[in-house]
Length: 235
Image 1 (cartoon, helix red, strand yellow):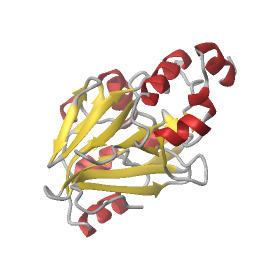
Image 2: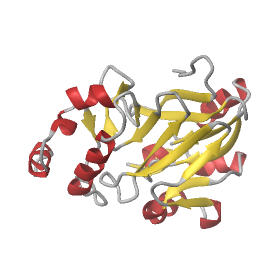
Image 3: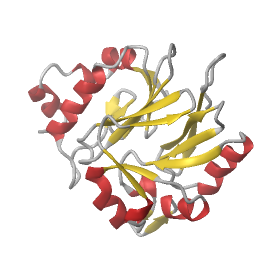
């Protein structure tokens, strides 16, 4: 799906990729004709073909976290194409939170010289669009969401495996932290209600939502205490 509105500079495309319900994104500026590819995996040809069809130059790659279904690598004996194949064709910076650098380089084989390492709060500017990086640990230590902001328009949140539509990411993996996930979801609840939410996986029939709607319907955002959230997660 594409999310462009009249008088907006935001270029935003959601693309379903792979057999695990993954969603990849193209986020950029129509005036600058530049975009980032967020979580490129499974179909590098398809992602690049979409940018070429839309006459957009790829100026960076952004990983919400380092898991293979989002950045490529070997998973359960299957090779998933991802950032290494993309960077071989488009030598652009790969934007990653510093806490996920070790996992990303181990999983994908990309070198440190290919990375643009970030802290939470860093901003990537593309034309009139600001892509603000929100550090949201919990699923991994370096999980990050990207918030595409444009003056006078609702922001677009690409929430990776932190916040899903009516659900949230797993916290039972080796690098997960359920208490950090609770804190991250509390932070996301503070975003304006009209913020559009675009998750890293299809977890419901709806491919996107809003923060306001999720505060009403998502049980993990409705949890009123850390203890309640942990009980929902089986702790």
